[in-house]
Length: 170
Image (cartoon, rainbow, N blue to C red; front, side, top):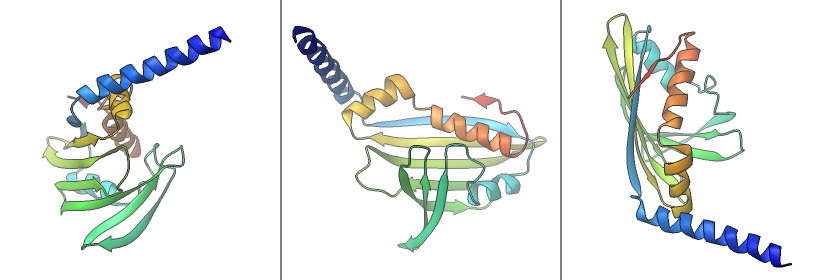
């Protein structure tokens, strides 16, 4: 019985430390990555604007009615979690800004997709202006998941969509 108390007490202490450190971290962050593709900006734009069936992190998706004149949709991840998004800015073929529209999640923010012509193709830059509200999740995002993992996965999936190797740049 003594060992059970020691183990439980240790777990509580670890979680408390994570919460304290997480509370000291800034709620907001900015992360940016980019990659070059051999595709024209229009091809990149229409892929980003179209169905997300090419993304490995999305297991299901669907459209929702517009809200306040903004296009909305949902995406479901491999864990069954659905997140609703809205299109905040749309400038074909150079820019899209997407915001998490769900309230009550432990995170939120926007993703800005900038598509620029480049010699022999395009450069896609993704900027995440994120916020992590839950202090434990903030600790995990900073020290375990990282702020760049989702962006880098997205850029790699985009490269796979076009049959290209993706070199991620900071």
